[in-house]
Image 1 (spheres, rainbow, N blue to C red):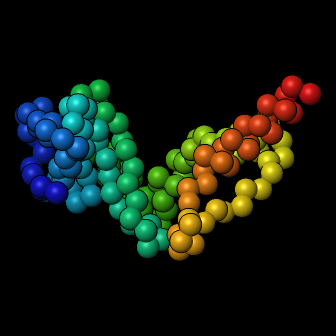
Image 2 (cartoon, rainbow, N blue to C red; image 1 turned 90 degrees about the vertical axis):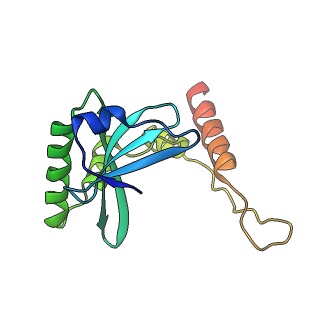
Amino acid sequence: MPIVKFTEQAVAEAKAPAKGRMELWDEALPGFGLRVSGTGRKTWQVMYRAAGRKRRMALGRYPALSLEIAREAAEDALREVARGRDPAGERASMTGGALTFEALAKASKVSVPPVKEARSPAGSRPRATSRRASSAALRAISSDSAG
């Protein structure tokens, strides 16, 4: 995680890594960073701790969001954190969080049958059940809307 002095020129010249993504952090404002993907997409972000958990919040993409405006947004978010708030959590609650089949089923007031957690043959670790749960939710929504 390189720490650099963010300037318009430094941000514009930030190159995409050959593979994966790279994160650059501002030396002037701790927690304010720029994520550069392998495709060259640059996204402003702020990282902080809330309720003991490390949180990351995207602020917007460069160049649509300039360095000056992104830094102001990061300062606002960090001020909220200092007041004991969680800006990323509040944003998720305002937007409803991630859209999942289960959330869609709840919103449409369809009952979704419970999905039991499957175990691996060795019985030591749970298998991924999200596909099964999503399928059950989709069937419940489809049968409710068809009938």
